[in-house]
Length: 207
Image 1 (spheres, rainbow, N blue to C red):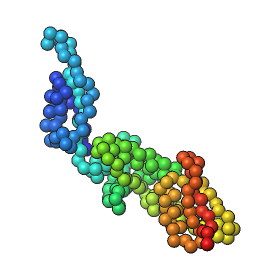
Image 2: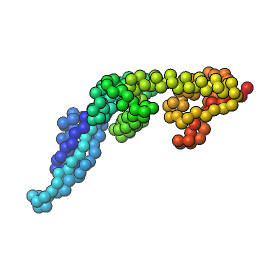
Image 3: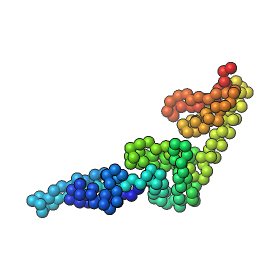
Image 4: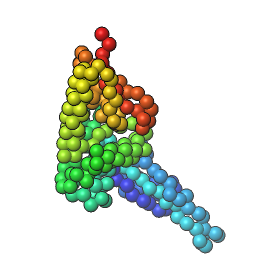
């Protein structure tokens, strides 16, 4: 992903210059008109050049890496970004210093990065991108922590025979627990409520 701003007498002239500089064409370049310009009075007095912003799309994977890397650089993090395919989506992995700040409390900073990167890619490519961001093996540690929670609550539910609602969890966290308990013959899991009130419930399986 490369972005430049170009001024010219007209929008069309600015587009032509931008495409020449970027080495792209209208099929792989996003054009945003900043100003359409104003013609000069009598051809010599006043006037204002047109201005556009042109972004060359270089492929979702490469652009995703560049977007996240630019965010980290602007936040003064010393880190590098790698990418790999995982199922139908992509996983961006951050390596470097200060992983705690990059991850944030309960992974909230990583989640914010995901929202930003997905949003930018959606505007660039007009399609939804399945993308996750990991740092310091947070995703694996989080999965293990959620599975331990699921195991403990499932054992409690089996023992008491009463269902139990878990604290608020993100959809991705609920999915991990659902998958972990899918083969459990004694309990079942489901979600109840809407929005911030949505809770995962683990209950005895009806026999």
